[in-house]
Each structure stands twice: as C-alpha cells, then as structure tokens.
Image: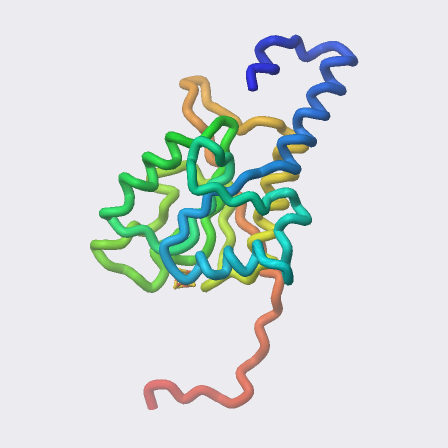
Length: 189
Ligand code: SF4
C-alpha cells in the first residue's frame, strides 16, 4: 500500500498505525483458488456454511488475480498448467501469500509421472503447506490462520537482500489421530 515507505517506523503513532494496517490485512485475505482437482472441492466446502471461512474474513474468493492476495494451490499441477500458475502468481497484488493444499500440490501425491509437477514450491514461494489427501476444511482453516498470525506479527512477507521473496515453508500439523485398523491387513499374502 506504500504506507511503509511513507511513514517512519520509530514513533508511537506509526507503531499503532502499523498494527491497524496488519490487523486489517489479516482479516481481509482474498483467496485465489488455483483448484485443479478434488482438493478444490474441499476448498469449496471450507467456504460454505458448515465451516464458514467468512468467520476469518477470507471468504471472498477471487478469480481475478489482481484482486487476490492469497493463492491456494488446491490439486495437482500439470506441466502444461505450470505457466498459468506462475502467470497468475505474478499478477496477484502485493503483499501476497501462498498455501499449498494437499499432497498433490505439495509433492505431486500419487501422481509420480513426468506430466505432473512434483511440488509447486519448486516454482512459486509456498508459505504454508496443508497436508492431507484431501486436507479437511479444519486443516485449511488452520493454514489460513497460520498466515493470519504471520501478518499480525510481521506485516509483509520477508524478502532477501536481492529483493526475492523468501518462502516461509511452514507446515500445518495434522489435527486428527489416525484410528487403528479394525482388522489386521494381510496385503500381499
Ligand atoms: S491431494 Fe488427494 S484430494 Fe487433493 S487433489 Fe490430490 S488426490 Fe485429490
């Protein structure tokens, strides 16, 4: 927004103003869902009434990158889609953030093939990884909250001395306890 450059950071008034700016940014994330597969359906569920992403101010999904500041990569990324992903990321407004949602977006998942990108973090800076196949809506919300905490404390994303964006690379821990199998598995016998 240009406020950081216009104002010095060592006065009481500026400190308080910075907190207001961070609070506003934190509570008005506009996601750009790059939804290519089933994780996209889970994103839709997260935005619907049962999980209600609106409680976190992040329900205004935008399909115009210039109106979005939070990219959610939800699903596998094909090699042919990669230039589109990068173009959309470049067109998004600053400061911008990226969530890699699900195994496919983060690692290629079970699609260990030449046609599937084996992790979108090789091509765009990922701030938060949300594990799962698919992640439950609570997990995605946890990822959004992780971004919100960073915005509240840090304000804008970190950059290196060369001006390049430094990906935060945080991972949301699974919030479910896996139940034991009800019967023994005898695979391969
Ligand atoms: S991680 Fe699982 S649910 Fe998500 S896109 Fe891949 S296969 Fe589908």
